[in-house]
Image (cartoon, rainbow, N blue to C red; front, side, top):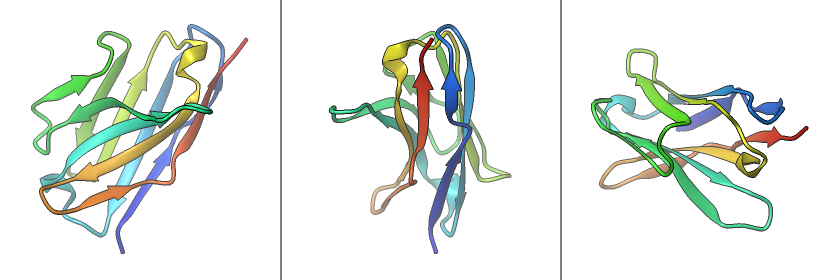
Length: 114
């Protein structure tokens, strides 16, 4: 069955870094555009980053601190997050989309606090 499994979340102090990973299975991973979303307490889900199926095009809600990458041989995407701020605290979700289907992971908690 289709699975997206996130990992790498945790607690970090402001200014710290985390590297989130998402492993996909059960679908043709390399043909799907991939996204990272996040949802903070009491807020709606928002787009953080996106990467095209080929990995050749990326987009970010906020440029400079986050970098998204993918490895289609391993069916994985990553989100390197640097200079983290308390407002980055949220559950981070991996998302896969093509023209017909959309899949979500279960999310991983990121907490930025001193």
